[in-house]
Image (cartoon, rainbow, N blue to C red):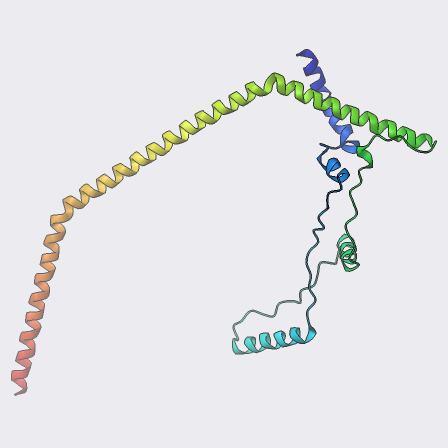
Length: 225
């Protein structure tokens, strides 16, 4: 256990060194070595016929004249060539060239071909970084072997408690909604007779009003004679 903890204290230093020399995993390296096809994910751009564009613009202007409240004319769209990176990528697409393959030299441990001391020192630093990366993997595996089972058991236990709390809260909300619905039903049943009496009173008043209107209309006819 003390060995694993001591190695874990060196993890930060190891990770900081490996970021410049070693990868997080060997998936990209293996796919490149196997000759996998890289995806060229540049945006699609289609040329527009000037005559068609002019005809469309005339239709838009005619529509704007017929609708004075229409929004103002939008600025002309143009491809994002402001940055040098995008300009270079668009130029590469115009030349119908593929993307440059990823540099995988830092993933290998091949010795330099020449006798340049700096090249040998760089190769030595690369080998040390990859050895530290592998040591970091071993430390992670040792830590997982020692603590992963208990950590996951605790995590599952916490998820179970959270699920029980959420279920209890939902059940409480359902009981509250049921009580509200029962109260509404009792209130409606209690006020039902009053509503029926009010409706009957309205109907009687409407009948008296219609009878009075008919009597008034008859008297007006008698006066007209």
